[in-house]
Image (cartoon, rainbow, N blue to C red):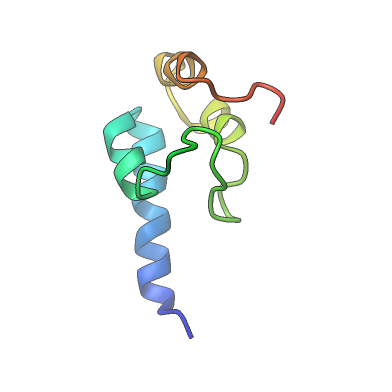
Length: 73
């Protein structure tokens, strides 16, 4: 059974990266998958661009789009 504290810490790192607009931290928090930024995110996050629209600075959303984030996700 997964450690609920470790899972919470993981989600907190992801959330902080979105809130700070820190692409390097987000990539590190999700283990920099080859299909980033269109990779599957944890269920509590959902589609990366949708989460960013709600919680991130505009420049971060623009950066995700420039990296190829699917706007129809």
